[in-house]
Length: 225
Image (cartoon, rainbow, N blue to C red; front, side):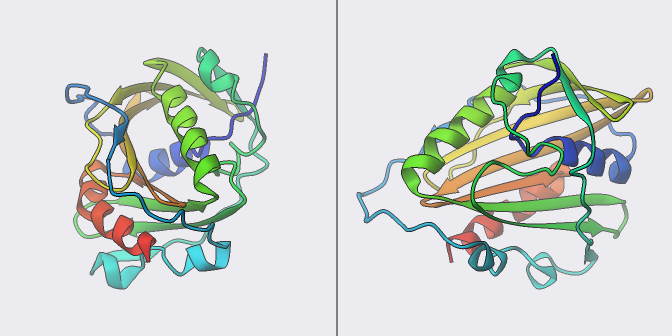
């Protein structure tokens, strides 16, 4: 049965495969996906508008030399089929081809890094009330890492995906991290995806593992405003 999901995965797959080429498929040992960072009680933050989120995205000044922002592409017409992961299929929704989570307010930026390699890093920001944002994002990422191996077909292109949970960073209120290995056309491509919820803002940073590690903390700091 063909269904669409609400995760920002299909667009990330296409972008990563196009940008990074062949990489090692070796992955580190898995650890916890979810980290609940205890903090003193605070007044719940209100949801931010998409315009406000856009002003909190990383830019070239934050990233440094060698980064160029890419024009956003519309992948909403891509026909995406999920195979072999019931947890993802059961999420439902229509946003996978557009590469967005199912939250009302969002902003996204993708940067190419050209100093020594053709790598990319993308950042997505989402906002909603905390009572909706927390449980829904946890459900998405638990589903994404619940199937160690599955496949998607984008158009007529099959892509095998292997996932590994990674230690979640000690940032924000909740955090998740995973390493994904995409196999298409006999080539393996590795992408890291780390997500952090800080109050009513949800930050997702994806791309080359080294670039994600380098810029994650700044992305969360800026997203907090």
